[in-house]
Image 1 (cartoon, rainbow, N blue to C red):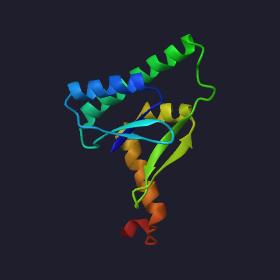
Image 2: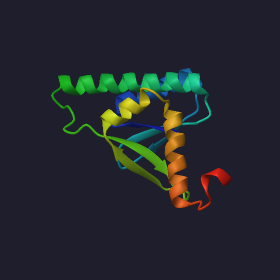
Image 3: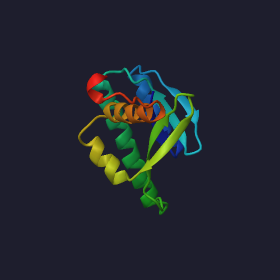
Image 4: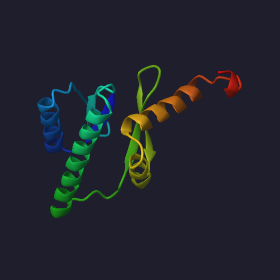
Length: 133
């Protein structure tokens, strides 16, 4: 699942309305960092890019509202969601600038695939030479 995190209810509601209009299945869950809306990873690149673009727009609008209200975040933070083999979800803190640069050239799905490949390799090391795999 591709997870989208929200720190305020209104953008989350707008995102869910968008998903409903597009007939995209989703799952909601609360998390220690915020409210999470997850969508399947197999939506296809075009739909995934539309969902990501809509999410980004909602986040920009939410940030602008906070700045107008004088409630801008004290920290600019981002994290990559990692799901371990046992189903536990952990977050790797990453500079928002780095995430934005990476997502400027690859899709969220590609980033997810890269991170999951690294996690799998760390949790289940394969000692064979790369040329024999």
